Amino acid sequence: VVQSRFSEEREIQVDIAELKRALDRGEEGWQALRKEKGGLVKPNIVFFGEPLPDRFVELHLRDLANCDLLIVLGTSLAVAPFNSLVGQAPATAPRLLVNRDSAGICDELT
Image 1: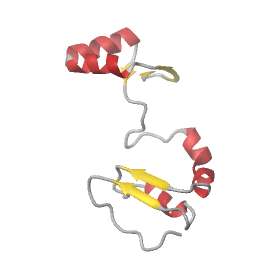
Image 2 (image 1 turned 120 degrees about the horizontal axis):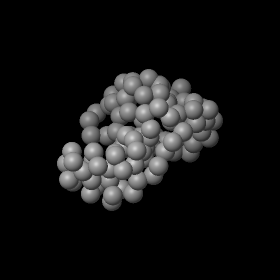
Image 3 (image 1 turned 45 degrees about the vertical axis):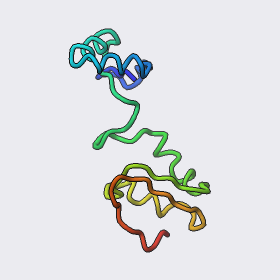
Image 4 (image 1 turned 180 degrees about the vertical axis):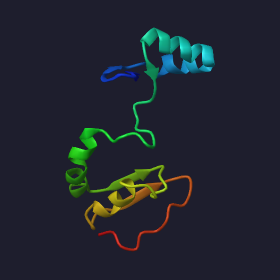
């Protein structure tokens, strides 16, 4: 995704193969891609410190209340708001944590 620094509305999808080719060329490659696309090239994810999308804020409580299985990937479960989400799924919903490192134990899920 290419995002203009000054406008969150402008997003251009970049094919992953095109991005990989640019990155394989080093700084020259990604700078050329940035220039061609007219902005910062970054994954379509939320980095630490960035605000969560409005869609998350609007839907997370409803989605968690209706989940049958909660799969959590790659988190320490130490940073809010994600560290509290595991306990917001129904008590009957199994939880699966896939992580490189141990991420603590939750004795009480509600």
